[in-house]
Length: 234
Ligand SMILES: NC(=O)c1ccc[n+]([C@@H]2O[C@H](COP(=O)([O-])OP(=O)(O)OC[C@H]3O[C@@H](n4cnc5c(N)ncnc54)[C@H](OP(=O)(O)O)[C@@H]3O)[C@@H](O)[C@H]2O)c1
Image (cartoon, rainbow, N blue to C red; front, side, top):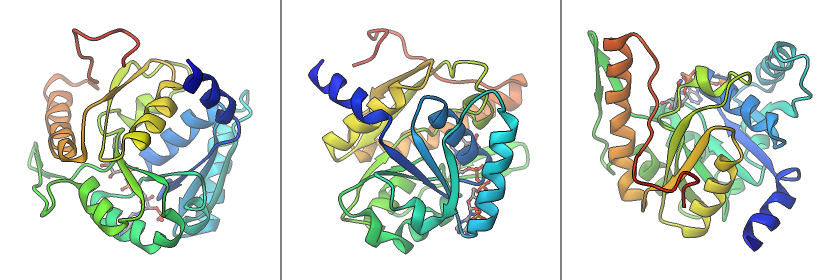
């Protein structure tokens, strides 16, 4: 309860930056985080592009006062919490490019290393097992967390609906897991779950291929819900 109260106090003050936040996933996350009061910085290799996209996001939601701003990636990396929102094969290099800003910070990796071959999504096996582990190796002084892999951007970005998903969080840094879970628990409909160390990021990322396959097969957008847990999570 004490932690919860302290955290609630910081929500309005916390700035969250998204590297490569100009794609569908980054934009959806930015508006959702902003909708619950986080100051959100959408990062890009082009500050102008990020500013333009943030203008469009605010225009899409004229009835909401969304605190989203566009900036160059290094400015997004200067936020208290940083999400890497690039494609998987750019995640480690992008984090490394702003490593000086990331020391000691919670850095959330949401990338899934997948390829689509014909009508099938296949997970790729990376040398370190997961994208998140590659990011952690690229920025060893950061506290990398794997999260957000399974939430479809379209659902995340639709502020008229709750997200309706469990959200798995993995990290080798217990306090970083806790911070990430508290941020995610602010999102309506999300139940954040501690899924263990960063070694579990590999199956979490790979499982996204299964979800995308279900979407294709059943022409829908699935999300995950686990049974046997407290409804509020941990
Ligand atoms: N889409 C989803 O539903 C979803 C759900 C969960 C997780 N994810 C994960 O979230 C990540 C982002 O997904 P997305 O669909 O938004 O990706 P995306 O549109 O392909 O890329 C996001 C942004 O990354 C930047 N970028 C692209 N190539 C880059 C490179 N080589 N180096 C540095 N920056 C680069 C671009 O921003 P600038 O050109 O502005 O720099 C781009 O707008 C992916 O890793 C994906 O696996 C996606």
